[in-house]
Amino acid sequence: MPEAIEIQLKKGVLTLCVLALLNRHDSYAYEIASTLSDAIDMGEGTIYPLMRRMQSDGQVETYLVESPSGPSRKYYRLTDAGRRALDAQTTEWRAFAHAVESVLDGATPVAAAAGTTEDVTAERGAEQ
Image (tube, rainbow, N blue to C red; front, side):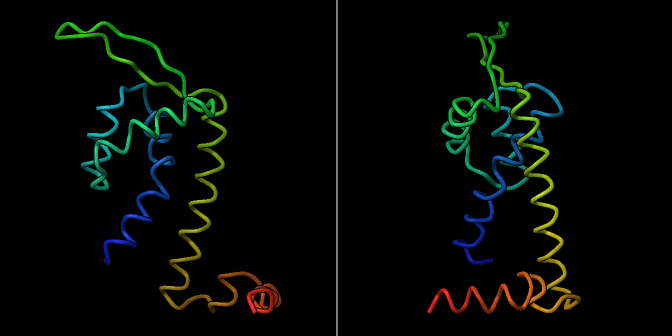
C-alpha cells in the first residue's frame, strides 16, 4: 500500500479506535498507544495530541491513579458524549467499509456506491 494512503487511512480511523478501546476499559495514553502500535502500526507521539483534543471535545475525561513503580498515571475514560461519538463513528465506518467492499468485489456499480446516478452527475457538474 502506498505510504500516503496508509497514513491517511490510519488518521481517519484513529479516533474511532481510541473510542473503541476506551469503551472496553479505562486506560492511560501509553497503553492506548502501545495497543494501537501493535494493531495498526501507529506511532506513540500521535496519541497525546489526540487525547488532548478528545478531552477538549468532551469525549473523554481523566483521573489520576497512583502507580507503585513511579508517578501517578493519568487515565482516560469515555464520557456520554464519547459513547455517542463511538456509536455514530462506528455506524459511519461500517457503512463506508461496506461500500468500499462492494466496489472492490464488483457487487456494486461505482455510481451506486457513491450515491445515485443523479448525485454523481450533480457532483461532476459542480466540479466543472
